[in-house]
Length: 186
Image (tube, rainbow, N blue to C red; front, side, top):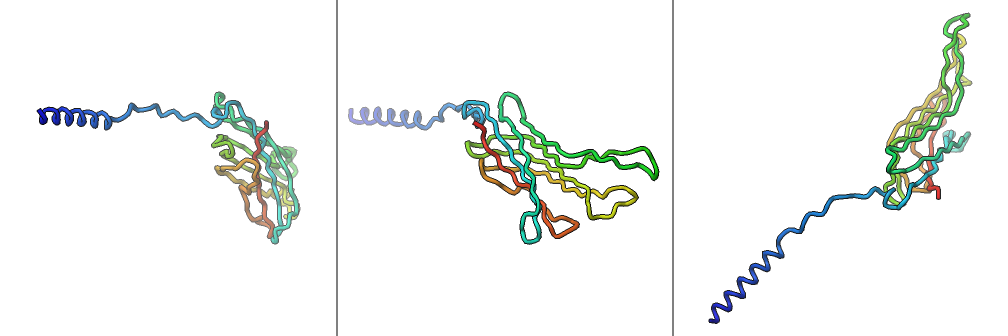
């Protein structure tokens, strides 16, 4: 009798152990995008500062450009652009009355803007800065164009300024850099 009770207890314990080891039902792997997680469409201000510095880091010139962008999950990939400058006519031949126009100025393109968390965002940034070089000799009435182009993916902490692009000026010992600050608009 004792053996039968012992065997019944052992059978019950083994069956309970088997139930405890069965895998739980798989939960769906659904990740809510941070923009939806915060419960509303979000708007951000992007502030670009182009700064020219001398060889000692002293600011010689700076310009500021701003644009707004929305992190709106139901509208696809948010994009923004800044275009400012001039179309400069350049003669196509000596004594010619025909011209080609060059776009000179500042162009920023922001693509694939994403909210990563309540304090971080990510985006692809393309910058194109061009100007007519006032120092270089003009060649047969054709201007010499200075140009800086950058492209990259950036992760930004909201409210913090970050140098996203920087390069030496080829005609001097100066540096050109682009700083970016992203802030949420409430």
